[in-house]
Image (tube, rainbow, N blue to C red):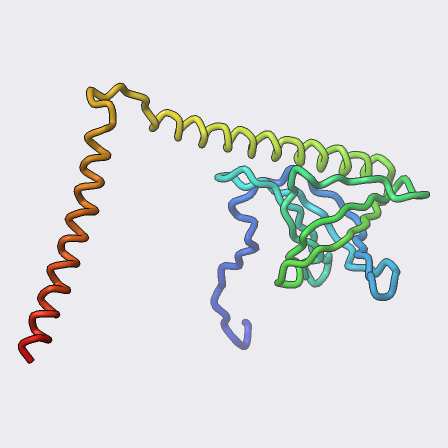
Length: 192
């Protein structure tokens, strides 16, 4: 029998509302500008996760043993993944990453065990980035169409002169009110 009884605690990873598109084992590096060299970020599984509601896709990688987050950023339309020069098992890309808890522009390099995995990763990320761009364009077009539907062009019986007259009448009324208040102040001052 156990010495201490512990209650079960529900653990959330933040990935519950997302479907995995890709899951590959790899080693991740980030480029250190100050030292002008690549620094290892961790070994683990890199995942592309698509949100079930909004359809946004993010790249998440956790270290195998500690489950510490190595990379966490959205795949955006402008993101391009390129083969790392001289190594067909690795590729590089830029992203605004949130792995350390604050948004920071990073340059990543990821190395896979096989050329096939690297190609799969590159192709999948490229497809996702392109689809995210189309989704944004479609969303913008839908928003614009909705706004245009709300706008209606109708002929009015007046030629617009009445509106102008009303506007100028209101300006005059405001001026008259201001004058009467000044007159009241002047009268009060002259009596004193």
